Image 1 (cartoon, rainbow over the protein chains, first blue to last red):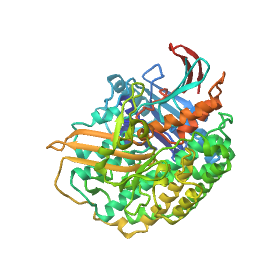
Image 2: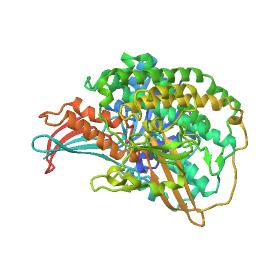
Image 3: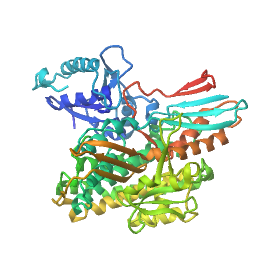
Image 4: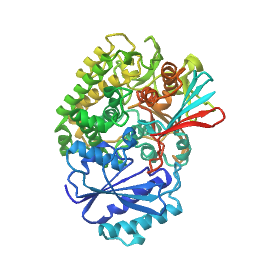
Length: 155
Length: 471
């Protein structure tokens, strides 16, 4: 295993929590030096998806960011997420180092702003705009060679 | 009167909140566990075609999507008038379900529960977690991660994807298991069984070695679960069985459709979660428990030899076992059972067969009952002439245990918080330990970054926050 792993998460049935899944759908149709994964939430077994990667990018919806999206480098760390059924990306990196007994790969968290998370809701208009903006950014960031024009990408 | 609020609970799925009502002398008068639940979902799927339901419901939950998928599939089997699947289809569904229960039980015990049990309820909070476990017990923690991974792999192989895969359809399954996939899963199954067996040792030794654990949050109640034709432990299909706190039958051999006459759900003004009770015992005395402890107490035997030997050991020192912390021991017996049954199914020649589906005429109503990792899960649907859902009722495992969790919290609070002038993190953790034993799933909560702050608050009767503690 090598290259970049992109791990998208969220609950697609809960409004803007689907942002990670919509990213996954787009990435699956793009080509590049990466492998993409999707799940409801991060958990301990995801350390195996990160094994021997040069880089890992986590993509998730967020409510606590100012702009439409935010990309930042993250590092292994302990927080209270290790005490729930869902691990934060930082806690997962920490678990990775303990399980694999090696330094965690370089990692980034791409947070896309969401605002409405009701069961059965579709994506909000603002989240759709944020998704498009974050997608354009990530394409440049990863130097993706998308085979699809933006208009053809489902969203 | 003062209220102490723990919001949300850590180490349970999603959001939850505990409110302890104290009087002026800091005596606990009532404990209330608040949980968000599925209420919206039953409305959400009305008007959708019945055949979409197994896929829709698996999007409900990131922890046990397979259980919802299979319970819904069983219900739409009923709508389609399917009474018996082909041998291959039924065995594939069972294999899928054993994979699901195995991964869920591994996650709960190794990741969420064992840090409390191995380090102690009052140990340093920063250490009492999976990373602490990986540091102090690296081999054990790694086995937990790999057991979870193996169960997830069973699910991925059968459903085609890790999530949002499709497997069960009305009347059967939609994809055969290839010989290569079977062989890949068989590759390390002996190791998985060996680790599962060692996990039972660990859970048993922890429970028996600490006298406090036998009485911690102890409540007595009836137990509800599915049971097989010969009274055997059953996770996928069977009849409903209920034993009293003393072990006598309250009822037995009730078919899926009989649940409507047995269980009613009470609504309380302070909680979104319903309170089910057994009609024949009434609202006050009719609360009961489901899940691993209920299943192990209820069954007459387990159909896998190693797990059956462990069951006999479990009930040898008094039965039924009521201690909530014995849930963990029972959970590990089921983990072993799942691993043994996975091997048996993978070695069965039917498992790679190609006869996957039976077809019949469409009816109007279907009920699917399954034993999810956390307990009995009921899906009930009615459709119109076009096959569109016009009624859905879901009774989920955590809801069954609602009253029991409140009773367990009250027990701990009365013992550890009653009369205390200061509440420590260790005291609050004991309440969470009691709740965690039931492994409640509050899965309809969203998981967006920043949506799950952990906060402990003390609030007086007028709603004033006296103090709060971030987690």
